[in-house]
Image (cartoon, rainbow, N blue to C red):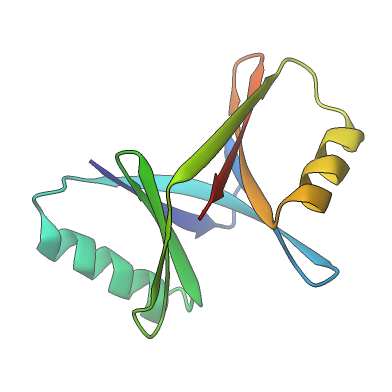
Length: 120
C-alpha cells in the first residue's frame, strides 16, 4: 500500500509541520491509499497534486520508507523514522521538535498523539 499525503483545507486528524528558514508551515493532511501494483493510479494522483493543487513537492510512504518528490521528479528517500507518543500536548514539545528537525507529522487518535519524524 502507498500512503500519499494530500494537503487539504479542512481540519483533519493529521497535521504536517515543517520549517523553511525561520518560517514554520502547518498543513492539514488526508492520506490517499493506493495499491502498490496500481502504478497508473499512483502516477495520476501525483500529477493531480502537482498540477491541480499546485503543490511544489509531495510526500508518500511505502512500507518502511518515506519519499519526498519535487515537480522535476527528484526524489529524496527517508528511511529512518522516529515515533513519539504523548497523551497531552504542550507547546514546548512543538518548539523542541522544530528546533531539532525540519518537520514532522502529528497523528491524533483518540487520546493519543503520535509525532512521526522521518530522516534520510
